[in-house]
Length: 262
Length: 289
Image (cartoon, rainbow over all chains, first blue to last red; front, side, top):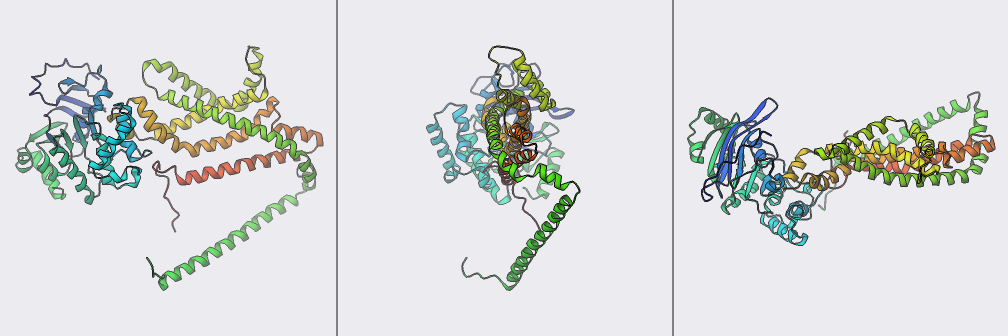
């Protein structure tokens, strides 16, 4: 990791964004995936990242969750520089929830244990209370009856809802969702997107990488089109999806529509 | 689903499969008898067979030597059982030591790597001789002198290195996305290792571990070279007593009988591909036509 940039004096707390990504750069070998990304996310807002595969959506989410070290740039969470290597990365991750494309549930644990793991180990919640919270959260995602199942006994959509419950149960400041419907059969996409829509309505702050343009149109406050490691175009869904200004954005959306995903 | 009777087409298929199954059994039986018969014929018609039969397959000697050899085998079983437990603990510690990060753990990491390199490369028989005759030679206080303990120690030293590599392979087989998921929840590296990686890794390597256990079972016979009276040593004594090699054959048969249940269990487990929820994609490849 490069030397941390001195933490810029953040503006007054009332106006500072919950998450601020500033000039973040990340390369894997010679492959530059993020080439100076800037992104601000205010509390209770939902920012949707769109772009072709390889445009850096996943990598951006992974750097925010500190699963990848940045090569340069700063990421602020609540005004604190979380890319500072002196900061306790585990504690930072514990304040965010991440959901992955392939669910990544722990296959050797029952659904309930998947959902209570972080509460018990990281947040030191007593077992009984952790289980009560997990049960409530599973009810919330419509899987109260499947608490004792193993992940491979569930459908893809159910597994992804468990993964969302697992990330939500510790009340994160921010949810990072990485193409969470891309591995699902088409008829199961709706149940997961509906759940995300409800989360947004409840005021959760979310950064969502997705190919679901319908979701972007209806739920996003802001849409960012990523191309070649930068935010190529950004704006409201109406602007970016309805009237894109950049030729590359138009080309991307045209291909998406041709593929029947809009 | 009541009231369903197989269609004539399905009945025809079932009848055909039954006929095929009966035929298969018949063919297998006939070919087995033929091959076994030929093997026996070749053996018994060899010019030296009467002599070999008398000195290796003497039923009277076999019966007479059985109790002593069995007694020795009981020692093998005990050595094996104790060694297996110690090996599992030591090997797991070695495998985990090699995954530790951070400069503080460098000596531990390096020591574990060096240990595995050395004891995987050394022939077991050399380790047995060095430990069995070298260690007591130091005349240090507290070093055991019993051949059984020293032999067990040599087995532990060698097998820990092998089993550590099995565990390490298991740890590395757990997909990085599992670690990412655990860390994203705020779990530390060691918490992720303990609760997410190791449980999956251990389940996956159980068939390989059982395989090493079978090898350990028969290699426990090597402690006889230190003078421990195990099945092999007992057979050796009986052999010189009767001037007949049959006790060796008895010991061999007993070792095979001892390992068969374990190998069958291992095969069954490998077929099942682990426990519920921990399948590594092994299960489900049924036989196709």
